[in-house]
Image 1 (cartoon, rainbow, N blue to C red):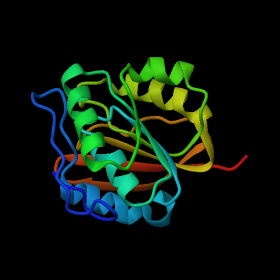
Image 2 (cartoon, helix red, strand yellow):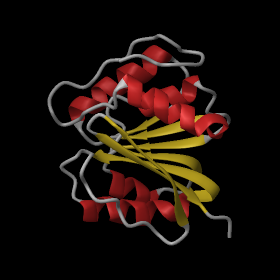
Image 3 (cartoon, helix red, strand yellow):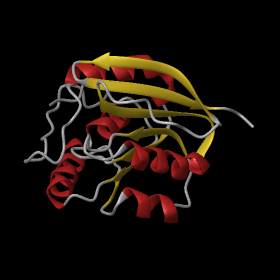
Length: 180
């Protein structure tokens, strides 16, 4: 894997060993970030189920202000920490479960990636989105990555679907939080 664009363009990052994670392909990541455009610059980003950190690191490379990476898997956590150090653009790595982090988080974000293992149930993804919603600023963007063929997760009423894309076996849904 590599960083597609920005300050760290072309730099390689490692993927965690084993089958517990499945990093988004370079092509899918490139399409995703092209669709996000200006929303990445100066963003406060939350990368849930960060794995290798490819989404958050791409955001930092493209001008995000900060990224919080949340990952529980020990093997993935080691790879994530090495990738963050290698790219050297910052980022805060939190080694805990997503639910636990969301329950205790006092920060807010304007861009969030929800990229859980495919084995995580749809009900669990929906619960994560419900816990995430209060931590989102008005007009925040949320991207959910799941396997093609899975149902779209139900989201809180304040999140509006603004895009859906398929890349290989990946399905990406993009939501925007309505201003209240």
